[in-house]
Length: 198
Image 1 (tube, rainbow, N blue to C red):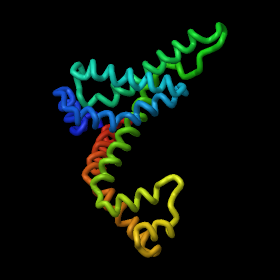
Image 2 (cartoon, one colour):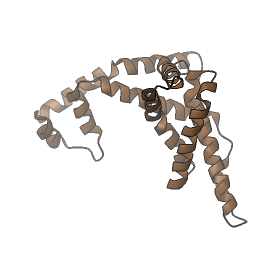
Image 3 (tube, rainbow, N blue to C red):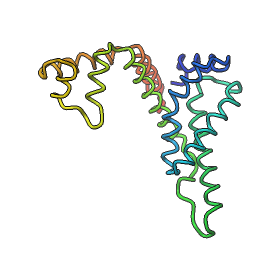
Image 4 (cartoon, rainbow, N blue to C red):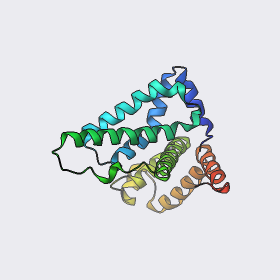
C-alpha cells in the first residue's frame, strides 16, 4: 500500500491545513498507534502520553515527509521509538537492579510492516462498510458485535424472518467484497505479493 493514492491525498490535504484530512488521518491510523503501544504493555497514562507525542510529532514533521504514502510506516516507527523512550524513562525511575522488559528489543521491520498492513486493512474495511446500504451495515454490525446478537434478536430488530438472515448476510458480504475500498486494497496487496514482497 506504499503508493495508496488515498494516503497521498490525505497527507497533501493535511499539509494544506485541511482539518477534515487531519481528522481522517487520526481516525484511520489511531488503531495502528494504539496497537504498537499495546505490544509494549505500557500503562494507560503512558499510552496516552505516547499517542499524544506521536500526533504532535506528526504535526511538526508532516511537511518533511519525502513520500506521503510512507505515513503509516512513519507513524509505526515513531510510535515504537516513543514507546521505547517511555519504557526507558520508567526504567530510570524504578529501583536499581530491575531489568527492562524484552519490549526494548530492536524494532523489527517485519513487525512494523505487519502492523501497517493490519491498520491499512482495517481502514479499507471501515471505508468499505460505509459504502454498503444502511440495512447491510446494520446486519453485519449485529452479526459481528461482541457479544453477538442471536438470529432471533436480529430478526426482531430488523423485522426480517430468521431464515432470511443467512442469505442476506451472504449478499451483504458479497457487496462488501465488491466495494471500491476493498478492491483497491486487494489490488495493492496482490501487487506487493506479485513483486516478491512480504
